[in-house]
Length: 330
Image (cartoon, rainbow, N blue to C red):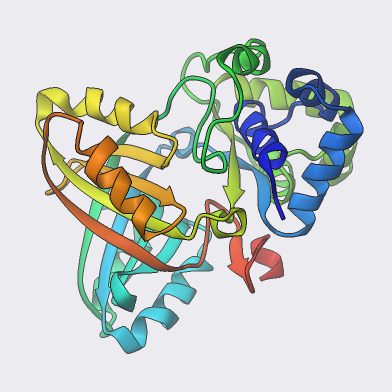
């Protein structure tokens, strides 16, 4: 149902989430109307959502990777409950239905106000848990995340889409209470027009444009592309937990992030010091990835695999009846 052009548009949006349909069409080599039609179909079908995100660093917060081993009969309800928490992202059930994996946005000091982290160990259905700090996410220049199985744009096309996007400068600008409607509207649609955002905030379109520019310039506002990989023909989704030699940590993380199969890679605290999310078409494709591309990376001393059996949430979007939806709609 979805073809290479759809994947190219997804890749283009990874590079420039708010680029106009006209600009995307010029770079890709198709009409503005074609890009708009394909994008609207992907969004309407719940295959992809562009979402605006507040950087945890702007609030003095950090991201943690939580792994919870549960009684199999309780993993589903616990995971569903976690997925609906606003501070939780990328929630899934793995390892045959006995493990929950999610990210948690919280303070970097676990002794302070981490209500969720304090509550989790008290649940009788949770048998064991580990919580590791995300120390450094890796991403190749020009794109972040998984873009439909392969990066369809050429280096020159990526450069054209990213050349006007300055690198964040200085510490993230702390959002104010006045910014809350802006972030709420962008969490619903990261490509919402200035006119729509002006209605949501009560500001003028000019003020919206200035505020977006200021928040983006410092990295306080980022954008995510939530994708249902299985709807694009990629049914196997797994977490890799790697032990690597410390001098090789950055090199291996950057190399992993360049793999088409890799949706996310980060250095983390804990027994495993590197984790990656890998998406493949099926089990044979995943084995080929492990035994060829991953195996050629020097410095990996040990690994563990958690195969996801059910995904419940992307960065913001809930997965409801096989579609990505805004949390208020789930």
